[in-house]
Length: 113
Length: 109
Image (cartoon, rainbow over all chains, first blue to last red; front, side, top):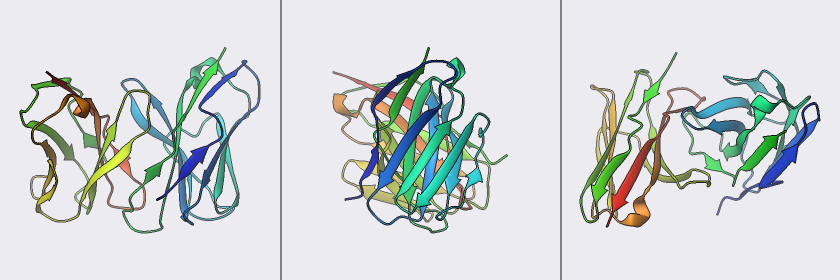
């Protein structure tokens, strides 16, 4: 079974803090994705990566950065957290294929006060 | 902008009925489609994939794809209260997946 894990289920941070969200997958998938999900807005792609040290911007990259130093690990970084970044953050992984099936982690509910 | 559209619902059906969830897409290059189920507070779970025109059945679930009409649907037969969730449709003709905003399904006893 594909397993995608995320470092925290719930996280509370203060405005201006630097926040790290970690995602690890154990199926040797090339692709990894970070989404945020808000009521009424659906899943929005923040960043994705097709290979180690490679990253591409998604639809809403502003205020975020990512790091992929190892194939199995993809980190999302909020350089200076703001209240409008309060959201559910979901990591996903997939094989490198034209339209691959994605597998999601359990999600991190981030609250920025 | 390549889009996937879904009615947000909620779609309310009685237990035992057939629930019909629909999705349209704008990218004619899209080749494959996926349906995810998402319970409240949980992450999306893949339940069906469909790659060619026609129907694909898996247990109580049937996915239908009509590329000429750019239309994808998911039928749930013998709906159960445990099917109550949000259903996300996903397409994408390139390497970047495109999700609809999801349809909320409520199955009442």
